[in-house]
Amino acid sequence: MFDTIPGLLDQIRSRFAHVDSDPFQGERVFFENAGGALTLKSVVQTSADYAAIPDNQGRENVASRALVAVIARSREDMQSFFNPEGGQFFVGESGTELLFRLIRTACLGTPEGGSVLGSTLEHPASRSACARYAPVGGKAHVLVEHDVSRGSVDLAAYRLQITPDTRVATILHTSPVTGMGVDVAEIAAGIRAVAPECFIIVDGIQHAAHGRLDLAAYGVDGYVISPYKAFSRHGYGVAWVSDRLAGLPRDALIDAPGASWEMGTRDTGAYATFSDVVAYLDWLGSHFTESDAPRERIVAAGEAIHAHEKRLTDAMLHGTGNLPGLAQIPGVTIVGGVENPLREGLVSFAVDGLKAPEIVEALNQAGVRTHTRKADHYSANILAPMGLEACVRVSVCHYNSLEEVERLLEAMRDITRRG
Ligand SMILES: Cc1ncc(COP(=O)(O)O)c(C=O)c1O
Image 1: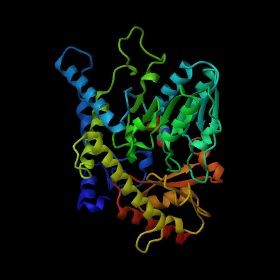
Image 2: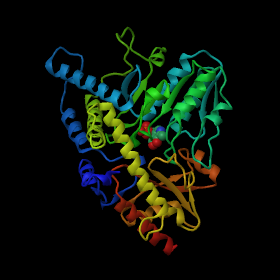
Image 3: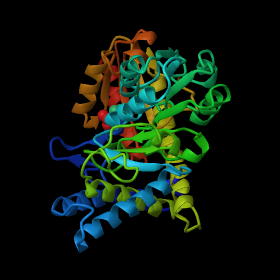
Image 4: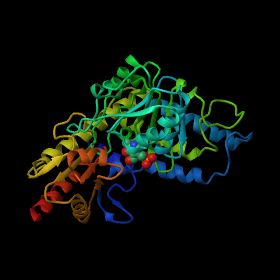
């Protein structure tokens, strides 16, 4: 997709820090995006700018008013990015902390009895929060089984356990281990058909970098992301809550005015860097639509991102030029299957007779950064049912190039030849 515009990929890459190298290893290809995407240079600058400002929000002075305006602007940008109807955005410590906070509020704020429904596909962030707070709220925690061969979960699986007293439900938007997406809108509609009052909370942390978010279409009550996985920086998470979820009793200061979900003084710089992400996507989208409407540009950017990433993962799986793809390696297992339209910029694989950490180390030696997912508390839910102890995760973002995929495939060819 980006190839249709000469020089665009170079322009994209020039906007990110440490694209080709980092201060620790030097030159390297970055395929560890699911662990944390590259950071926009604008985000780096903005972070430094705001770190230097001592003022707090809510004061009667020029600086304070400017900070409040930055936060308001960022919330408008979040509106373009997520496209919800109503509700509110706020930042928290991390994606995990926000998932815990939303899930705790829903579990404790709904009547006792009934269930909290999730799936075995989920990251432990949401599974652990439900396991902890469902019983405290007098509810059973029920997990439906994901489809091991597709590396995803669908409404048919959820439907087996949806009852009129399903009070809270959690959905993982994209798996960080299989890389496969989930049809959130379909599952949410299926839940609402039986349990209209259910509070539905989505872990969008792995999905956010891959574009095409549309909360208005999902019909959910909570959505959480970790901005360092979406071109911003570490140190904060972003959550959206529906007006309904916002109306539940929750942790807040006694007699505090307004409906804020924020706990204590906010980091204006965090909000400002989210505006940088949206500004970047606006710029990217402007190459793919005539429209100057912010939301339309974000949507156009998302479609272009998805198309480019698909090109990269297709090349990774099936090869390019004379280089064989990962799917052609004898004894390979591709997590979630080779042909899977749910894939979002990620290929996880294991090779018979080669240990995943050894492959990752050999790739490191060849200057290609990937990651081992072990069957530990993060990934055993996905890998154990496949009989895998570990897999190699290769995760791309839209700034990665076909040449970088070739580097990976060349290295894999050499590693598998050596055996
Ligand atoms: C799907 C998903 N959920 C939750 C998390 C936890 O995010 P954080 O560590 O940013 O809180 C991750 C991190 O990889 C993730 O991929």
